[in-house]
Image (tube, rainbow, N blue to C red; front, side, top):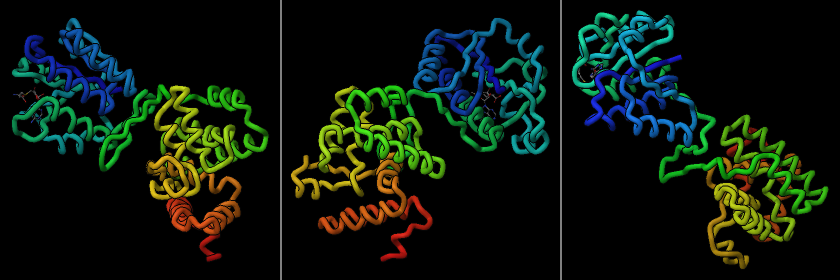
Length: 337
Ligand code: SAM
C-alpha cells in the first residue's frame, strides 16, 4: 500500500496544485492521499476521476498529521530538494521499502518533517515542484511500470494520433448481448457461428490484448444484422440495431467494419452502400474481423479469400491476408499461393 501526505496546502491558493498532487498520486498507483485540510472541491474532483477512469484512491483529511507521521507503521519518505539523491536511495533501499508514506510540501516544510521522516529524498537537487517530484519518485517505486486501471468506465486507448476513448458504461454485458440475440430470434446456425467467433476472439485477445468487454460484445453481436439480411449490408444493419439500443458507438463501428477485410469508401460506393470507410482500424475492430474470417479454421479463411477474389474484390481479399499476417504466425494460405 502506498500513501501520500500533502503538507502546507493553502486553501486560498493551492487548490489546483493540491488536486494535481492527488491526481498524480492516483495515476501512479497510490492508495491513499492525505491532506490536513481537505477542500471539498479537491475530494470531489479526485472521486469523480476515480469513478470515471477507475481505481479507488482514498482521499482523506487527516486531523493530526504529526501523529500520522509519528505513528506510521512503515517508511516515511519526505521528498525535498535537500534530501538524499533518489538513485542512491533506491540503490540502498531497493525492495526493502515498506508501506511508504510519501510526504510532499508546498512553500516551506516545517523542520520537524525532516527530523521525523525516515528518509529525506531529492529528485535532483534543484527546486521544482511537488507534482514533478512525486511523479518521478512513484515511477521509480513502480519500477517504471505505469499501473493499469482496468475497472474504469472510461478507457483511454493510447493512439499516436487523435483521441480514442471507450465508454464502458455503454457496452452491453454478456447477459444483455444474449438477451438481444434471443430477442432478435437468431437461428441455430448463426448462434453456433457466433459462439465460434467468440472462441476465436478470446484466443486472439489472449495473444494480442485489447479491451475484453468490447471484444466480447463485438463477437456476440457481430452478425446481429443477419437477423435483418444475409447480404453484405448486414454489417451496416447490425450497427444500426446497436445504435438504436443506445449502446456504444465503438461497438456499432466494430460491427459495421467486420465484413471480409473491411470495405473502403470507394468499394462501398461501387456496391451501392452508404459511402463511408468501413475498414477495421482499431485493434478490437481488427480482431473481430479476423476472428470472423478464421472461426472455422484456416480452411474458412482460404475459402473466404478465394470467394472474395472471385467476386472481383481483390483489394478486400488482400486486406484479409494482411490481417492474417498481423495476427498469425503460420497460416496455410501462404503455402497455397
Ligand atoms: N524548499 C522546498 C524543498 O524542500 O524541496 C521546495 C518547495 S517546492 C515549491 C514544494 C515541494 O516540492 C517540496 O516540499 C518538495 O516536496 C517538492 N520538491 C521540489 N523540488 C524538489 C526536488 N528537487 N526533490 C524532491 N522534492 C522536491
